[in-house]
Structures are given as C-alpha cells and as structure tokens.
Length: 546
Ligand code: N01
Image (cartoon, rainbow, N blue to C red; front, top):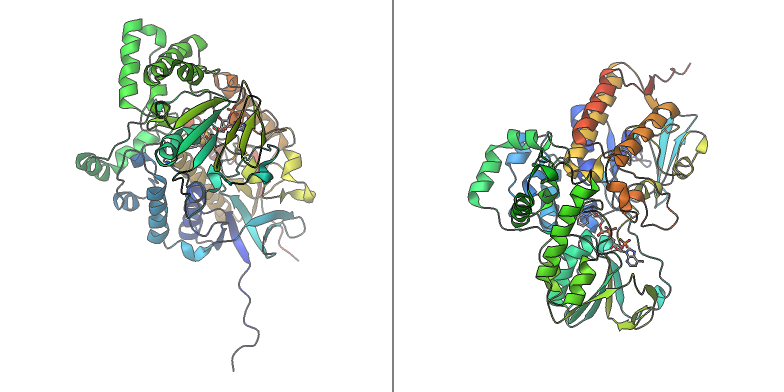
C-alpha cells in the first residue's frame, strides 16, 4: 500500500546559499563535493547566472577580458571552455554559467524561482531560518549570501513615471524576450558603464536616441575583437599561468599596475604611453602609472588625455564639450570601457541632453520633461545603476541574534569584519560583501578567494567539532577603520556622487564600501586571520542537548 503521508521534502540543511551566480555555484560545489555537506541553493531567477541572468540590456558585455572572467579552481573546467571574443557578451557568459552547472551537476541542489524574503537567526535552535516568497521555511546551520554586489536595481523616483504611455525598463531587470527599438524614439537615462555600453547598440536600432546625461564620464575603447586561434590555444594550454597572473595583481586582472610615476617620464613619453594604452584598449589604461589613483596631479594628466580624445572623436563642439565636462578624477568612479560610445554622438539620430544644467522634472505621458524642454519618447531605458553592495543584502530582511535587523546594525553604513561576517549574526557569511575588495577587482578572482576561505573555515570547524562562528564588535571596528584608511589613501572618495560611496541612492549613508587596499593585501590578511586560529572570530561548539 502506498504511503499516504510521504516523507516531506527535507527542509533542514547544513548550509543554505542564496543566489546561483558565480559565488553561489562555486560555494555549492565546495561545500557539497569537498566537505560532503547537505546544501540548498535558493535562487530567485529561473536559471543560473546571477547578475548576468538579469542584466540582458543591449550591449551587455563584461569589462574584464574573457579568459580571466571565469573560474580557475579546476584545470579540467578551465580547459573545457573556449571564449570567442576578447570581452564576453552576456549570452556567452550565460552559456558559460550553464556549462559550469552541467559539468558539476549543480542544478539538483538549486531551487529556482525561489525568492528569499526573510532570514532569521533562531536563538533557541541556534540555526538560521529562511523564508521564501511562497511562504516556505527552511533551516540551516550556516547561511551564506551569494547575492552579488549589483543586483538591486535603482529606479529613480521621478514624478510621473506611472503616467508614461510608452514602455520603460531598467537595465538590470531587462525582459528576457528583449526589446524591439525599431522605429522608436528612445530615451536613455544614465551614462555609467551600462549607459555607455547600451548607447551605440540602441542608436543602431532606434529611430532616435536621446541620452540624458547628469554626470559626464570618461571611457576608453574596449577594442573588442574575436580571439585568434593562437590566443585561444595559448589560454587552453596555460591554465596555471592565468591563475597565477590573476592572483598576483591588485585588481585580480591579468595585467599589473606599472611601477612608474607619471612624473618619471617626459610629457612626450607620457603621451606615447597613453596613446599605446588607448590603442590597446580596456581597463589596463588605469594601470599605465602607479600614481593615477593616488595623486590628483598625476591623475589630471590622464584626465586631460581622455578629455582630448572625446573632443577629437565628437564632431559637434557643443556636444563634445558637454561629454568632456567631467567633474571627477579618472577611475575614481568605476571606469567604463566602450565600443563606439563617443562616436555615437556623431549620428544624426542621437542627441545628448544635459540634465545637470536642467534636471529632469517629471515624466509625462508623452516623454521626459526637463527644466528646459519636453522630449517625446516611446521607450525610456533607465541605466541608473544599483543600490550597490548593501542593497542586495538588506533586501533579504536578515535578522540576527535577538531579532536584530541587519538594516539596524548597518543604519550608519555597513560594518563587518573582512567583509565576511557581522557581529550578532553567527554563522552568516557574506560572499563579496561590503568591506571586501569585490567590485574593485575582477569579480571571479575575489569570489574564488572568499568561497575558498569560507569553505576552509567551515572545514576547520567541522574537523574540531565546532558548530558556530561569530565575529565581534571590536574586530568590526578595527576592520572598518582599515577599510576607511585604504580608501582615504586613494582618490576614490573624491568622486562624491559614486555608487562606491552609496551616493547614488537617496538617503543611503555615505560610506566608502569596498576595501581599496587591493586583492593581494586582502588575501594575505584573510590568510593570516585563518593561520592565527581565526583571529577576530569566536568559534565554539553548541553544547549537546541533555
Ligand atoms: O550604473 P552607475 P551602471 N537622473 O551607477 C545616472 C557594473 N557594470 O549600471 O553619476 C539622471 O555607474 C547617474 O548619474 P550620476 C560596473 O561596476 C559592469 O552604469 O549619479 N541620471 C549615472 O550616470 C558599474 O560601475 C559592466 O550623476 C541619473 C548613471 O545613471 C556598475 O555596474 C557593465 C539619475 C548610473 O551609473 C554600475 O553601472 C555595466 C537620475 N535620477 C555595469 N539617477 C560590465 O563589466 C542615476 N543617474 C559588463
């Protein structure tokens, strides 16, 4: 006779991981296959990919070069994949993520279409209790967030958006079926990395594109191209070298920052260096001199070069002036790279609108109205960025010991230890959390380091019969001071409206969030903490029940 009460699906786990992007997939693999733990990944999307699952906007492409924008922990995995272009496009990254999930049979432990709406530390049980949007509750000893840094869309609160008669989209929540711009009048708000990638692609398709610029931005050409068969072969045969290279640089990139000052060379030599870097393209422009991000006078030379390039490319002098009217040091905001951004403004169907001089006042049924004019539009694209770093964590409604909300603990800005743990939130690990190098690096390198550290830490605990780990207020105070000192040693805080500082979200505390001391130093600190028996953490074992 069949069982009338079949065993309910197991809802208790050793670890719950939230998110199935780069971080979640590797964390699942590490805990399940390395440590033999019972793990459940909860993922809001219907597939793997994380940030790349949602960011499908036109022109979406990674700014790290493809051969280093992947995992390097497995030689076999690395050698089984081949990228097609210097910079991978979003669909190719999605194919890669699915390749990884298939290779390690990860999907069986991922629950898709499952959005986490709450996570509470149960003081009595000393376990995490996680609630999904469908009302289900799952519990686990460890809770690990793998929610990414840029996964909470920032749609500006502009009056009238609800009245717009056309369609509007945010780049980070792009419809999977795509958007047809043919014959449409499109307005694009935002000129960060996303707007700069999307502009040339939308301009090709739309009847007219109006770009609403509040803050002008630098950009260096990506010089994207298909990879040659020789380069592909070199990559396949050099897994160890790629891994070594990306682990030996400050930013997790394959290029090192040159050990020379802007002022070690003559102006002519400097110009030749900048020209060569411009021709080579990509983020390594910022690695041409060691003091670009340390000394304003040094930075000014790069800024001037890049502003001159804008004036050379853009034919209309008034438009060129507006695009080159940049108010922050080069690379103090995340430096974009592009494929034809400035040249797009030479097209007859592209217009630049200065919304710093005349801010957007409201969205009308017909389009966007600024202080100077009304622009009729069929489609509005918001490339307005994200509630970065803290947004994706706070959205989870995490409550620690005694029901303390993470939002309250972080009222004045994020406070944690190594970007990994918050006092009062035992057994919670935040992969690439604020206070870690994360967005200042090539993300897969930072992710592998965090996941390896967390996995080693849990292995250490299990080997000793320890069940709980928690950091302290004192450790957090010390770390926050180091994060601030690292940022203040650079020009990064000088971009007052950058999302690194939380300045793009009204009401968000202004705190420089990522650790700017570099990946090498950060890795060494984390290794030292572990070597000293997890200094700054208390490890203990739950008293056995009597
Ligand atoms: O967002 P942003 P993003 N009215 O915050 C403007 C990563 N990324 O999506 O500077 C008018 O940088 C805002 O103006 P201002 C990368 O780390 C990676 O472009 O606040 N304008 C700014 O121009 C990147 O840094 C890749 O004055 C408004 C823009 O919107 C991060 O994502 C590709 C406005 C937002 O720029 C975020 O980039 C793309 C308003 N009310 C992105 N509100 C790859 O590597 C905001 N803006 C693939």
